[in-house]
Length: 467
Image 1 (tube, rainbow, N blue to C red):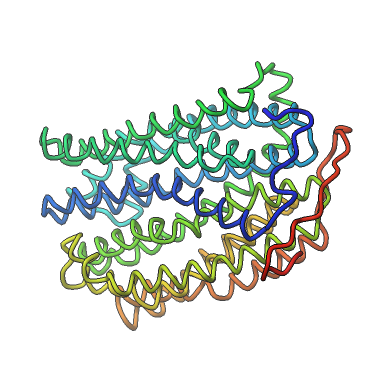
Image 2 (tube, rainbow, N blue to C red):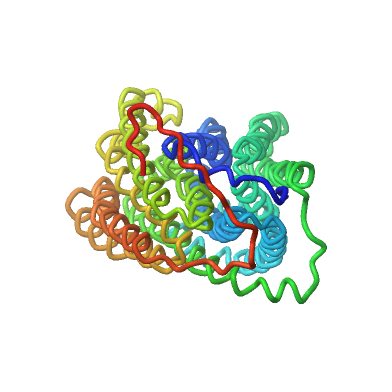
């Protein structure tokens, strides 16, 4: 993967620049995954059938859940690989990458199988009934078996980012989005397959993402080991020590979103369609924020592995500053474009009101969600992954359900969304506090007598305060 004398990329230089480059390039790749869903939503909306749009909304909540499993695994692999590179131990980095990919593939397949056989009750749990329920289940029956391929693509991207190759990780998912953009109109309109065509395009996109993520690892970073059962068993402990709490952390988000979908279903399919549109817009509009955990993780991991705690604190600070800048720009853009966005989805009545609400004040409150993502990255890479789990589950349970129910009873579907957003304020502050505690008292990674690391002092950047 990396030569024995290769300098870990993030242990020197401007931290804000590293955070910006990694977050922006990672967000393009991550957004490409969600753009696949957004493209499906736009084309399905063009068919003019409300039940199809609602079915995509229900299916999206389930797919968000399965995708979160992959994000959790990729966080674990990224943390272990980047630490090893920070310790100048490329053999260990390759070993962790290999084990992580195998575990992701195997358990991704098992997880997909469990979800597949439970699709009907899961969709019913979200509040779907009648034809909308049947359409959502049919869509998911086609897409869910491709979950292992998505796992491979996401873990492959995490390995690439651990090496600092954000561009290659980005391009893997960009190619997947392009495949969807080409196939969707052909399958949905050209062949008249409608919802089935959208599902088929999503499966092809996952195949493309997996292939394009593995290709640069094999070509440029030494590929993977030929694993033995003993190696896999030995590495399962370190992988799962981070992966289990990381997966639990990520799963909290779709659980909270599922509750919001269920709560808004009481106000009719127009409300569900509005929430579905907001749900598709969120990861695209705030893709940079979603990408922060995975983008900052390798920066923190390499510096932690190298023992540069001051630079770890500097990366955390740079992440918060970057979050504030992104939220300000994106919120302004959403507000200006709220009418064209609603028109794009042919949103009218309550659906349009919910889109306008999302593109207005709720967008600004996403700064506190950004604090949670940055704090999670710190805790996951400094040996405190369960702290991230506590924050995320708290945010999406006690930070969502009581407020959403209370304000929903006052303002209807709009109140549900407002309550969900307000819960992020308290837990954003908690995430930042826990991150600072993790930096003050990290759990040191085990070393395997790597070569000594001689890191240069970071080069000062005019106007930037050094860590």
